[in-house]
Image (cartoon, rainbow, N blue to C red; front, side, top):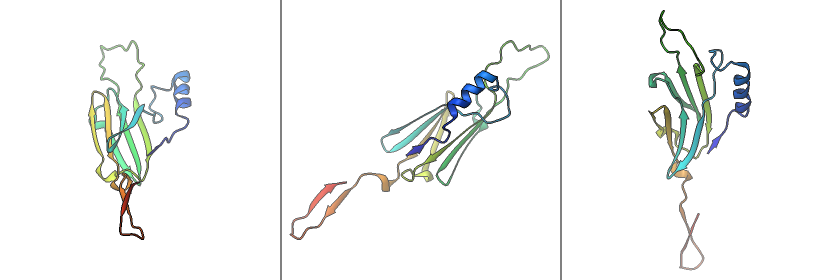
Length: 145
């Protein structure tokens, strides 16, 4: 149902930690996520702590789900001296290729406690169904597909 789109994500995170580029605004950063099936829907949860919900964009086009979010620095004044700045800032993005078994016309999303949860229903055509088998005799049998 889901294909990972960035095989070098862990390598990129390691490079950001080693070379100190995590706090720069130069390139989009991947966001951690979990994905699972629950009943008749596929659920994806993205960690976006400290991101204003108005700064989150969620788009789907041709079975590609794109999530973009931006975390801006805390407001500072003349009397503020930053002591530690470890939280990554800037644009975070993630693209997921969704399978044809998902109903992308009915995606729902909510944001709570720094987690963006996207719920995608499983398409009716992908759900298991019974198929009737007609035989030469008058007796009909059903099997479960």
